[in-house]
Image 1 (tube, one colour):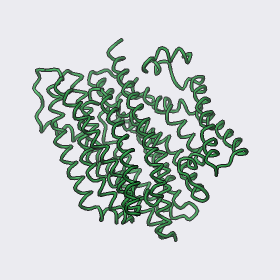
Image 2: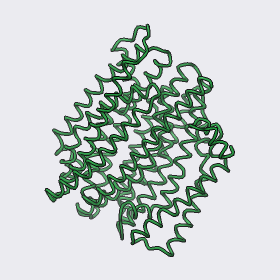
Image 3: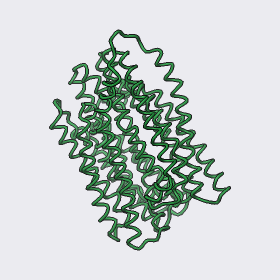
Image 4: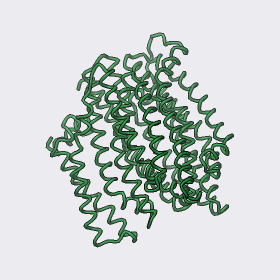
Length: 536
């Protein structure tokens, strides 16, 4: 096997490891958040989500761009055999990460009341305080993960994500139940639930620390003189700052968006409790939406060091091949998920959210709109990662911030329309993702010397997904004549059977219509056997 093919296999093997870990993480997340919704209710879940939004802003400021920068720089140094440089890059990044993490944790703990009041949810201060220490722990985790990912080793990251999710599940649910029984207060119960997140980050940090110290001492020796701490810091910041500005800016826009749509709901006649419930339903719909979204993340994490390695060695052909392959695979994942969520919005939210009546109607409308947007969200993530790997980190940032401002204007007017109300929020998000995807693809054609065929490869699975969606829609409505969505068994049948039928139909269509290629299969573990089984 050639070195280039070996590198491509490492990229997809790493993505496969992260995807398997993500399956467990999402299952644990469902087992965590779905009963949590029943324990603390929509209002408590709203407090929980508000704390997460504040945490996400500070965390993105600390870690959004730096892991990408560390991964790129370590990948380039390792490709050249410069392991003294690898060590120096890690040490520089660790100082920066931990400093930012300490500041973020302090802000969440010391200013929890002010942050909660800004979100029009003053009772969320407990959850924000309990989540504060997690910001420092995740920064510590990011230094370890960047070190391993830059060398194409996704296994430690995958295991640490499983440990983090398992601890979050068991500690979080137990703490929520215990605190609610003691206090009979959903605000404190939400804080108890979020302690599981902090404990999970602590357990994962301990595991990654042990793995790192062993791997660090086993790095090969090399004779080159490493760059100075100052030059490495400048290199890290050159990549990290544009990504961080974009990510933090986008998350800040999310916080402003929450302030806008909550304010619009209150100004159009809804009470605080009604607005809190609507926000809780939207947050629950986003939790379901985030499940398939998360399967795109392993691809974007894996391709950055893989593409960087090819570009460092001057291998433009394999860099382009890797970019086109990830576009096909992302489309293969995103298109059936998007169509499935849009078509199955009502039974999915009825089963996973336990909604009925008008709450179910609202949840279904939110879920269907989010489902459509998922397809364009995945395209944004893939094109962002490709441009970052090619050293063009600033352009997608500009695109994201511009589209984010457009989204705020859209959300303000859409939510202010009584016929749309909070459904205007996912409509604005979908339009924003479409705009960013278009701007990214245009930008790639303008600034990249090698021009991968992203649109053609990404759309390859669209027809298969539409056929699947039509069949799933028909099966669901046929079953609806015989089963009621009000019973638990009826919800399960109306949700599970059409999805199982859809999986089978999509698999057949994807193979027959060549949505997946033999070359893609060969990059997978046991790829020859998979390709032969599928007759590719």
